Length: 249
Image (cartoon, rainbow, N blue to C red; front, side, top):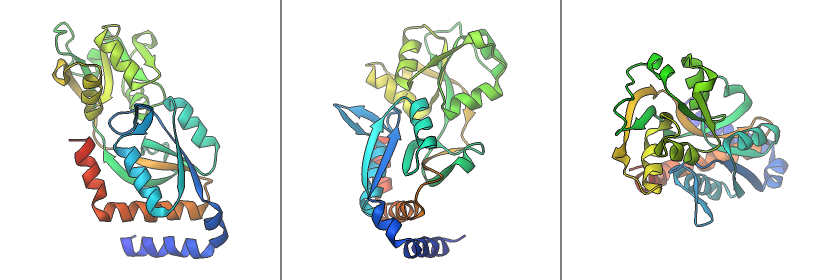
């Protein structure tokens, strides 16, 4: 479907559901700490995707409440509650039918990282990882994909609730390697007063997926339509590119 047809369908939904549209004045959004996309700084939830969502909801004239939670809790909350949104979430075949999708909002590259100084850790393939303690974050798509691809014993996997705690454990040498997005790894290293080049990417796991906003699939259709219109307006305005330059480069 081309962009004109999509916009026509969205407008038709808004005409069909005028009462739902006026009632859906508020959106509850949930996210995790995944800098620089979404994170808390000085008590304020910020980041590239956060600012993009706020620009989208402002264009759509929707009041938005954003809560920062551990990923597993945020994910389960949005699965259970209509008129809720989760970000930044990877769009995968398994997740496709359970959400309404808006985006993409960002590209995504997932690597296995080690500390550059740890010369004893040698990884050339997935099978090499069986010898090492691997740090993963619960319920993240990268974690699920990694577990599917690997044959690592359960006692070699260390689950963390957040990307920050996972990175801290790597620098403390409590684990040997972690699975992380490239830009997130660099940002987290800096936030811990470390240099990004202290990390070494040893294996590329995935670059085929992107990040999106996703809504519970029982969300009011008029609310979904308004958000899609808001996203397209922000995208066309050039604001999306400005935010990418601010946070991702």
